[in-house]
Image (cartoon, rainbow over all chains, first blue to last red; front, side, top):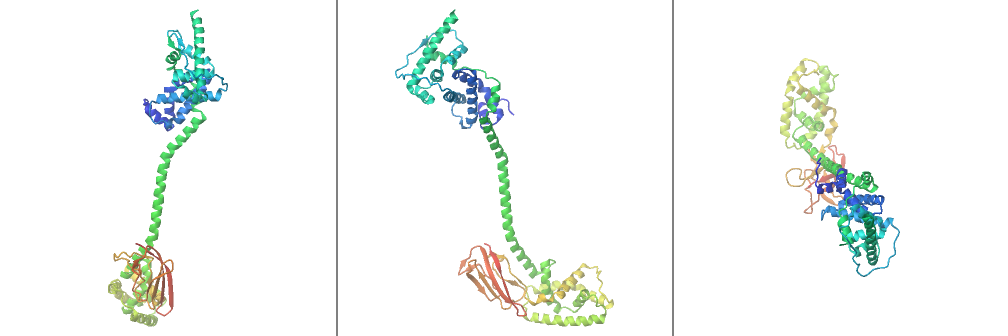
Length: 183
Length: 307
């Protein structure tokens, strides 16, 4: 019984359903997956639901992992997909938006702002679910609006407008927070 | 200044958050996880247990199949061997003992009467008086003489007839001594120390108690033959130590086509029909012959052609 196992050995162990390897994999990636889940959820409870779904998906579909590309990227993608499917199942509130076909204007903020990761995470979690999903997927995960539209089951224009509104909303909240910090 | 999307990306892309401890148990006990692990465990076990089990099963089946094939073939081989044994020499085996009467009858017709005296006393222990014994002896001798003379007229000597006689003589070398003993004492001692003497008594008394057997030709029909020109069992024929009167042998395939017919008892079928070699399989024989008394006899059965 080896204490130190390479990632490949762990993955192979998980592929044949060895619980010891599953625990090691979990320990290795749980905080990353939890971080992703937190970004996509309104609160910690929802984040835990996403987290659980994500890990179960990882373990169940790990036998399809063919060691092409990084395993971490694969786990990250599964976590995002879990978040998306969670959103599609749980969040019924669909904001109806006017489609925006033109380019989204940039919204600038000062990068020296004294916000911690926790503060920014709180800002994202306060966004309406639709905004939050699009903002996460576009800004942080780097998906294109076409992909996001397909993932969330909305039109490309909706994705664009929601992203723009999310940015405006965030900027507004940042300014409010900034003022609070200043005071 | 920075675009707000990039700003958030820089800050939050590598966000790590420690999940609650109980989440692992939730993940582990998720129904989908449990099902997956159960299936994988079953697969692993079936690999460790199932594969050897299948191997063992296949071995057993193969072994069983082979042994059953051998069981089919062994009787053929054994019987043929036994038969050859019979012809060459009579040993202690049950089969040969039952055949012994034929040869020993022939022998005894040419042996000194002493042999029969011995028999008489063993088979009819009541006759102790020398005079009575003589009477009985002469009667028996008469009977015996008749039957044996008839036989020795018809019988062609078996091919190793001479060697057989020699053997017999060797075995019965003790007879004169025995005779001498009998001439003095009224009774044959059953407690003869020499095992060979006992054997002779047994063999001869068999002849005596079962004289009818000698009346019909003793034949052997093999259960199979191998027409491969190796000199062994290349022909399907009826084996006998003596001529079989009114002999007719028919051989048919399974469809009832007659493949072979012979009236000569020493001829055999070589496994061909109209120049073609017949395939391996089961064939049917019908054998008609008559006993030395003239009673017609019919034997039928199957045999294997083995290539």
